Image (cartoon, helix red, strand yellow):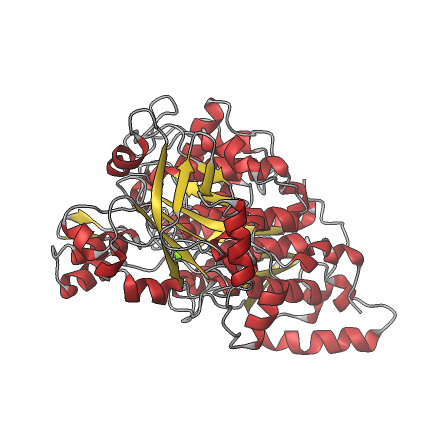
Length: 590
Ligand code: FES
Ligand code: MG
């Protein structure tokens, strides 16, 4: 398979027959950390390790250790490792939101991969946006690339109860509001959910996006689910390092792997795992950068009717360690494949097809990974909704609780639909200030709506749509109200929300004219969501209050981000960047 004869792009730097002075200049500084000029000129592949771990990216910090094993693998396969940092992303500390950083990391990594003598790259992924951003960049440059997940943390425990990342926060917040726990216990439960190195141990956005990378064929089989501290994680790092060197010899680039079927497999794995609603903009963005036309209807057509197979929080009970022991992503893919719901012919980074990679990977733990014919829930994918408030919004059906289904979706004669009075908040500060105000008179017949939280409005789009009911309602046992908004919600949330609505209010979407007291009808039978406000009234409101207020940008990047970034429905991509694809194939940058 690997003949080693293909001339690699790095030789354009280190073996320039016309300009010996340039070759010498390039070689000089690389040598002072142990690489010899002979090596650099030998034609050995130079393999980048895109290092996403740092103190400012704690979920990925394990990669600082793992990179040593990855280097060993690269060396043993005859490559030269070169490690460099990417822009850090700290999901839960970054203000106004880490969502701003996905496109920033993307831009930076494109420049690094394109502008330096790198023949192939190991993308070190983990925390939410660190995965899609790097895959987007690898597609733009289109050099061989392989994904190495850092893996989830160990399972969290608190007083004998499994406490999963993020999910425990949302659940404890309700317990706190109900007066069942005090603040100290709240903090204790939250910190207990993070017992080791690694990314979130629930099926939040991090685990979802690493499962997606594996399902698309970008990481070695079984990579995504291995917990960060496990022995197998280091071995996976070593094998990944070895494999990328072979991929360079095979010229196995992202453009050969990421076709439409790869993205349909990504959607399928999200449904079967009860994955994060953030997968929608990220998968959409990766497809756009890969040049794959992935219509928004694909979420409904290929994902919605799939069953929930994985019993992992927030949609299920367990956490990452058990997922790994139960067979991880290959076992989920195997179930889908057996049922004819996986595109098995896709080429993957192993050089084999997806079907070959996962052959016979039936789970030994049927409580964790259910057989396709006996799932945890039928029709568990994302539902794509539209109407007069927005063209596109999604609903993650796998987290709709029985309590919620009974109250809102099972009314005799009106199954699958409900009408509710809108309570409208302008961003999360407004929500926090007013949610417990008795004057709002919030009851079970209300829907909480948040706007001003999208790509332009926030900016970056905030994880705020999973709003909880007023404390008084929680105290009398109402855990969920329907919610709707132009922001996102945490992948670890178990809230039944309609979110990512596009266009957002700040871009002139219908939420801008919505008023508290309007009645909203949600009908899941025809996937619609409409405010019962007539056209003349809408026109009158728009004339009265033409432009929604958007706060000023605070940094240069915020301004540029707002100028260049599209709506969540389309993935929140920078449209102008999509025309750059295969930059490395255009020859040596001058
Ligand atoms: Fe980083 Fe969840 S916050 S992985
Ligand atoms: Mg998140």
